[in-house]
Image (cartoon, rainbow, N blue to C red; front, side, top):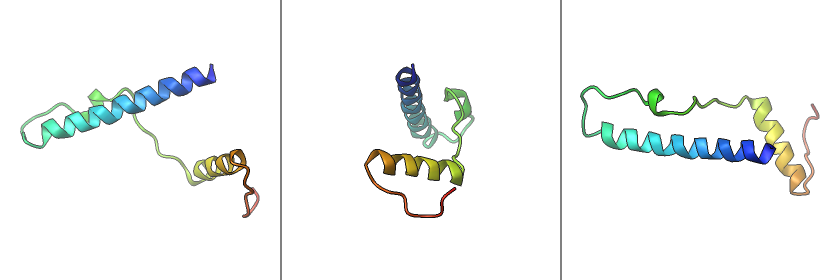
Amino acid sequence: MRQMKARIAELEREHNDRAWLAWHTAALPRSKKFPALKKLMIRERHTQTAEQMLAVAKQWTAALGGEFKGKPN
C-alpha cells in the first residue's frame, strides 16, 4: 500500500512538472488572459520544514549505512 501511495505521489509530481512547463511555454509568448496555473495542478505543492528536511536526511544517512553526527533531537 505504501509503495502504491508513493507511486501515485510520483505520478502527480511528474504531472505537475509537465503542467508547469506547458503553462509557462504557452503563457510566455501570449501575455493576455491565461488560466491560472493552480487550475492545471492536481494538488498544491507544500514546502518542508527544517525539521522534516532533517528527518529525511537522517533516514537517508541510516539507509546508506552512515552515522548521523550532530545534535540529537
